[in-house]
Amino acid sequence: RAAVELSAAPDRAEAAERAAQLFEESFGYAPDGVWSAPGRVNIIGEHVDYQDGLCLPMAISHRCFAAAARTPTDRLRLRSAQDETVLDIDARELAPGNVTGWPAYVAGVLWALRARISGASTRGMDIMIDGQVPLGAGLSSSAALECASAEAIEALLTLGTEPLDRVRATITAETDFAGASTGGLDQSASVLSREGHALFLDCRDFSTRPVPWDLASQDLALLITDTRAEHSHVDGEYTARRADSETAARALEVDTLRDADPAQLEELLGRIDDEVVRRRAHHVITEIQRVRDFDALLAEGTVREHVDALGALLNASHDSLREDYEVTVPQLDVAVDAARRAGAHGARMTGGGFGGSTIALVEASQAQEVAAAIAAAFAEQGFTAPEFFLALPSEGAGQDR
Ligand code: GAF
Image 1: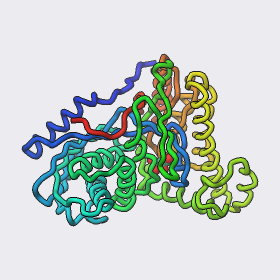
Image 2: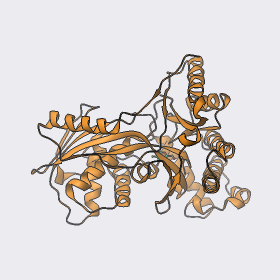
Image 3: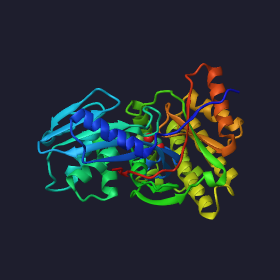
Image 4: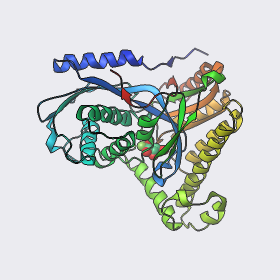
């Protein structure tokens, strides 16, 4: 089989330098600083964040950079290295609906952060975005954009917010300003992740705990496959799944499915009349339990020591998302099947689904082979060629220079 490329993210320091240069070329003066935030993969705990569930994401090495400066005007001026759309708006007049496209994800953060702080400055700023998280790959390029912007805005306006305030503001920006539904998984991962660790996230209160996830020292790797099947969860399917899970919670007379006891699963499911809603509930309740089980294994030993059991949980998560939650597409299923057949310990889709990426837990020495097997399966099916990355657990949002 032909060797495939496992793409690496650009070097962080070099990318920050580039963002500063782009700012200077575009605005004609040097920025006050450069801030960045990473994309993420979710290792396990999918489509549970909006039901107060548990998730285990990690930040990846691909980041979005924001070079920015405070200005003595009232204007918010936004530019991007990836898109020609520019924004130049009176910063005092930001309101949901008056900014569209990618700038809404930045302007919305300014709007949401200011709303949290009484008497916050409304002075203007210039921001140049350089997004290095692959777009449309389900790796949270929009959360990275929001969270890099939040770091820059916090620093420029010295608002005094804590990381968790920024998580909440970026969620509000996405749901109330940009108009895309989201449960908070992506923003939490982008802001709160620690290098070398996965992030145990309790979506009930967004409390977190770093979980050691150093695969490289254990000769293991997490292979990301961007299936290149365009995904978009601004569309109706994501909203429909949320609605189904809310219907299930009402049928079970709980606030959210987090409160449904997995030990009573069969009895609880028996109380849901609608067959589709019952399957949706089955996914959410069992997925939250899988995160507990995954976390318990990691608390008890290394990934290497529990690699088979961890892999089995990843597989079960994908199968549940395919059969019960119905958020996979053929590209996701083919990538997962090919990875498993090529010897991955476990593989699953990651993120919202309907396209996007998969992850596979593999022996480091077999990453190439597994990627080649996925590429071959895609060629056989006539799918667009996928792209591959290694997921290295990276640091959350912060200042670069
Ligand atoms: C998308 C959403 F933005 C997240 O909030 C989460 O619901 C995820 O899909 C599914 O786990 O990434």
